[in-house]
Image 1 (spheres, protein in one colour):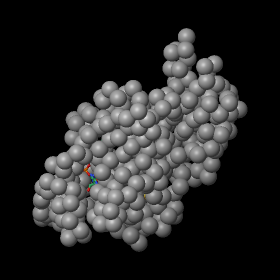
Image 2 (cartoon, protein in one colour):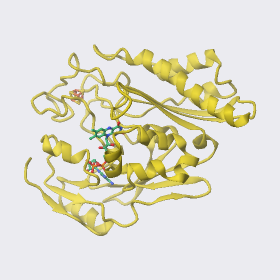
Image 3 (cartoon, protein in one colour):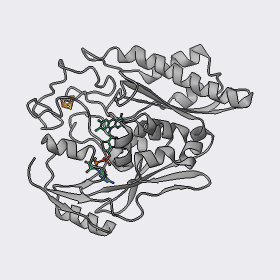
Length: 335
Ligand SMILES: Cc1cc2nc3c(=O)[nH]c(=O)nc-3n(C[C@H](O)[C@H](O)[C@H](O)COP(=O)(O)OP(=O)(O)OC[C@H]3O[C@@H](n4cnc5c(N)ncnc54)[C@H](O)[C@@H]3O)c2cc1C
Ligand code: SF4
């Protein structure tokens, strides 16, 4: 590990000033991604700006129609927060199936959004990797790609975004809030991460010296009927091969009035399926033709690699299962 400095600012202004003055600095939250990558030499910041003492960034707040989560709120605190569990159960589920209890106690929401791909070549400096060193090539194309992306890939990178929370946040019309050299701004969660294109090293909208301050999402029938299903090789402490974030508003007889869908594990971004609302509105959750059209729209343009074609049937099954689970939960409450 190369030597680095460490500072612990007490105000956001001070943190932003330090970031502006040290372009190679990185913000440190829980450290569960950053420290790993520093140990392996993949990330080499010259200065760590520990943001854990910045006031107000760990709050979790509810208003009548929105939920606000500070960037420094810990995954475990958000998952177990009564307001989150009641107003956006899918968000709580997405956190509870992530990582391990110990990691969730350390890891922050901001860091979770900004975690890096688990592509083995990205994490091993002995292999060419366009994301780690632009222009060197992609070892995963034709190599070990079992858990990588099938949607939105490019000839330069087929890595996937491994997180869970961001997928549910994108499905629920969430917004990510930032502050930085040009002031505060907000971006929709579904647009926070970038597809690789020709610049896989640029992964998110976060600019130089910008800090994530928190996320918000509207609460209402959609968020209250939300569900996150994660499919993985083992049932704990494992990343998703496929995940499904679904939310639906139901009529009294169980017909779907409105819906949201996003998929995880399949792309470098949470894969939001925009046509879900139009394809499911007015349909019953067990309408096989509507489900078939939804699955077709969700996986349109998929380009599996040598080792990950299995993700397509897995995703088809998972979308149906997630929707059925949500509908069953709603039916239970109706009866
Ligand atoms: C073994 C293991 C298993 C895991 N399994 C899962 C899983 O199944 N699902 C899942 O979703 N995640 C999983 N994770 C990832 C884990 O959730 C992330 O490591 C964690 O959420 C990162 O948060 P952190 O606070 O520790 O971030 P840090 O490591 O402190 O930071 C991560 C990155 O974000 C930047 N950063 C942090 N906070 C801010 C901020 N406020 N503004 C701007 N930049 C910031 C840092 O500079 C760094 O680049 C796993 C991790 C490990 C180690
Ligand atoms: S898939 Fe992306 S991260 Fe993995 S080796 Fe290729 S360029 Fe690097």
